[in-house]
Length: 314
Ligand code: PBG
Image (cartoon, rainbow, N blue to C red; front, side, top):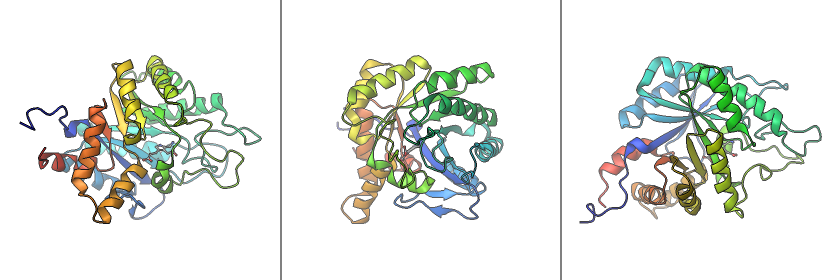
């Protein structure tokens, strides 16, 4: 009866596994705080994907970590090379979304270009560079572009550029409701993307959404949908199920909940201390995310989803 009457049925088809790949490292390194997650080289990433496919997950969100450039220019060739290689090895067996942001490229760690005085992010110029980057990623074979920078107008600019270049079928998963959060710590550590110390723009609060302003998140999702986003993302996820529900009510778009690095690491901490069952605690969070309206779940444990769901006794 419990299974029959369930409101929620999790299935591995709705899961996306984040992947980290770093330029210039010679062997994979574990990601601090993220049990079961490693930072791959451009060679070992292929082993990781092969093993994930065998475990049943076929959708990925790729975070390329380039060597930081010394000058002002941006060199997207590492990211493009990795995507092209994954595409040529795995073909259509994988669905590959590429994160689109400048924070692991800039020396200061902000998600875009800073003004001369360093006090703000220059929106227009950043959007132009992001559109260039999107075109490189699509050209290399990405199925989906996932902009995480939070500049205004980027979805329209990217959609326009992709369409103009014949990439009409490349989709956009917008980090539409991305809150300014303490829960990105392990990710920033892995990607060397925390804002540098001593900057006048100390954190990302001027361009990410304030947790005090839930309405902004809903507005941002509606705006991104209008500009051409195919999937709307909410992150962090478990603390923001009210926002997931609100966006679900206001739109009919697919909604992705990103259970981010700090949220994941917090659960893994409980598990490490022997205070929670690993599979059950993740399944409980995933259930809550789906129940609140997210059909797509991005989790660092997506590679476990099939096995855990199969053995789950509701
Ligand atoms: C970069 C980006 C961040 C995440 C995804 N893309 C971090 C940030 O805004 O600093 C967070 C993902 C995670 O914590 O798992 N713009």
